[in-house]
Image (cartoon, rainbow over all chains, first blue to last red; front, side, top):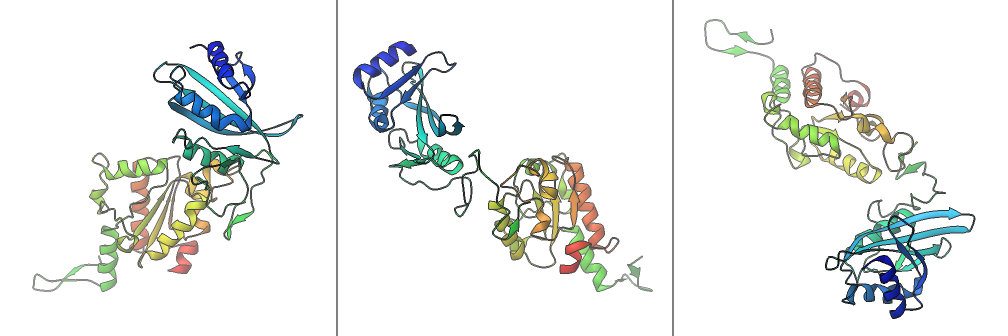
Length: 160
Length: 166
């Protein structure tokens, strides 16, 4: 299925879920309403016409702009049955970085969401085990935030 | 010549110090311990082509209690640094540290913007030999271990923090 048909199919099933369609991008993507993501994820995986059985990657992005201090949670999906791809993006305010977890829909997302949490601080609600994955457990801050300032020392070890 | 033949018999005489130092120098057992790409070169040094066994160091020990020499081969992240220190403290004396490659010497490419990298392993443990390179070739590691042997044999002094803790 091409991107237009995918978008039409998804809009027909869940009219509330999709806020914007971006077909012009190299990897076309849908802007998804945060609250609709769990429902949409199940539809994408379980609808035989969509059958997105593979989560290729999930990334966290800190993208502050004139519009506001925003975080993105970006998902790239692939269907091994239909060989089609789809990008999903959820835009969050940095002041309220809660995003529904898809780790129970695609287990691959488990560690990816932990990384996005660790690096940019998106809090995935419903994640089975949301701990830091790269930084030590007692690390402070989220290093890939644009406004991140490296600490002067960690556990008494200088970092200058 | 530290070894002398005793008059009129098949007996060799030497000092205990020379014997012990020679034994340590000829059987430097490193710890099985690699942190990044330098570890690949360290493994190459252990494999057939470079054959670290020629110098008595082929026995990479998986426990610090049996190791004489810690080769810090790679990037020491802040998360790993406390483990490195703990492993060093668990090693029995006499113990030696080789810092292999730019990352463990000084932070390497993570010097300026590496929020997560320790800028030199000598900030937490005393280092005997620094091997430059990114990563150093296996020959460089062998040369570094040769230098360490000279230190053990007393031909070269231990310096810096390594001398103070000895």
